[in-house]
Image (cartoon, rainbow, N blue to C red; front, side):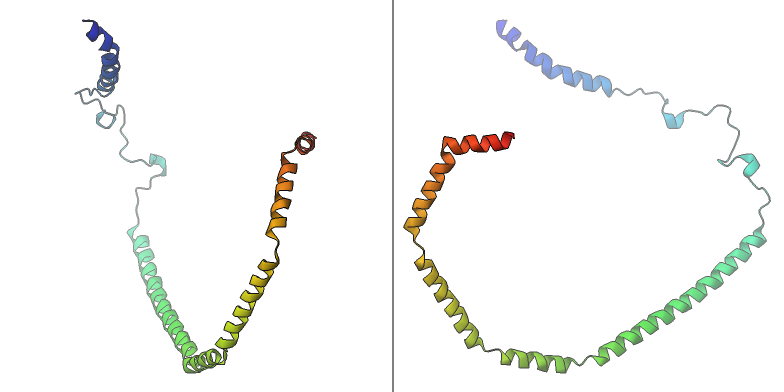
Length: 168
């Protein structure tokens, strides 16, 4: 019995959310949904107010407007075709003016003019010079300088000076 009482709060915490979910999601079987509710005292059949609604619809004006629209659309279609043809002609003339063979010849001549051996020799010389400069560096002296700088940064005097500048 004590074991059941010991686990009883744990069971309550598991059942409580399930029970609340069931209560919140309970569905009333009636037809009281918003979409099914009858609208009382509404006799208007259109969303437009009556005094703004024109009952005399003139089909002649509508037909005239549609005819004008069709004519304008036909004109627009012709203009778009002409524009497309003109654009195609311009592209063709521009491409015909470009001499791709001449560009290819110039590119090949430029590549042949490059002295790859000279470039390789300059790169090798630069690498040798960099190696000589690195060899000149006294790493032992640099290491002692770094240790001295590290000790200075860790000193109390520097910390107090840094803190005073920071607070000021």
